Amino acid sequence: MRLITCVGLLLVLPAIALIAKKEDLPINQIQVIGSHNSYKQAINPALFNVLKAQDTVAANSLDYDHIPMPEQLEMGLRNLEIDVYADAKGGKYAHPAGFERVKGQPAFDKDGEMEKPGFKVLHVPDLDFRSSALTLASALQQLRKWSEANPEHSPVFITLEVKDDSIKRKGFTQPEMFTGKTFD
Image (cartoon, rainbow, N blue to C red):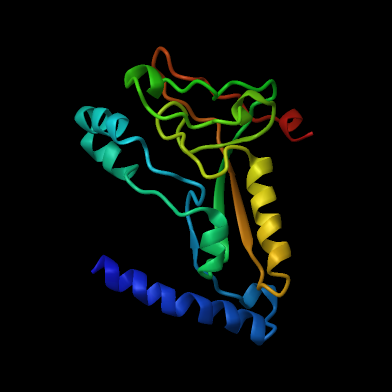
């Protein structure tokens, strides 16, 4: 069934993008298909198994991933949702607690992006932190590059979800709270 759905989407999505472009519709009349947590990559299997042993329902709700955002746009998706966490000083999310819970996981930030100040893109600090764009800046760069390579594309809607919720347990990262100053 999943295969049929995927094949159906592959056939329909480009047509939807063409319709939106072809008819020159007002923006409030365009309908699009998109993804939620568009940046999300799978949790490392060993860490996922630890989470699943503790809470199967919660773990199963995290058991998905997406292809990189530019590839989603190539498929015709035109709505992307990106979660952002504030990190004014840098490094707040660079050392997820999940690495302490399960040793030997592959690195997730080979270029040190998480050490730099700026908004970070991740789903759940310490547990579901793998992303095809670790920072908002890199996410926007990916989207700009795709847009420049496809200058005739239909509108792409980006939803930013600012997040500062946390796991209230010892050893877990406590996110920066968003304030008016955060957006300055």
